[in-house]
Every structure is written in structure tokens, then in C-alpha cells.
Length: 67
Image (cartoon, rainbow, N blue to C red; front, top):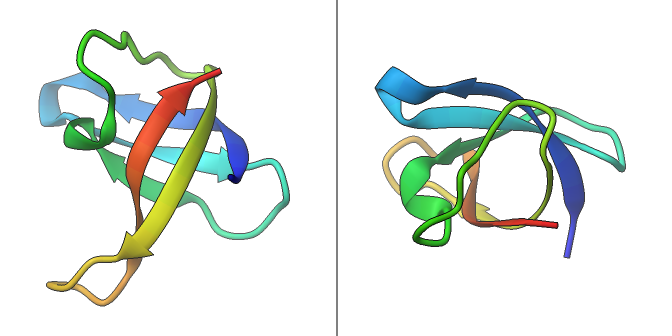
């Protein structure tokens, strides 16, 4: 499973971006990808799984777990 750090978290819009440890483009995620009760913050280390968003055709994180 890929790893990274939360680069940007926009609380009032409930989404953010992960900077992958392996390099490459930042990965979008919505708060619905988080486990219930996880308190996300910028700089937090995470593991994540990606999939293609059917609406936009772009890659997004579908599960995000704090390390």
C-alpha cells in the first residue's frame, strides 16, 4: 500500500491532498475516505489506496489510514 503525508487539508470543504513518499503527483482525497474517528491534520503520515473517480476520470484516494 502506498504511503505519504497529508500535504493540504481543507477542513471546511472536507478534502485534502496527499504527497506520495514515492514521488509523483499529489493525490486528492475526501473525508469519506478516512476511517471514522480519524482526526486528520497536515503533515500526518498515511497509507492509502487509489482508484479512478468515475465522474472526473482522475485518480483519487478511496481509503486513507493514519500510520
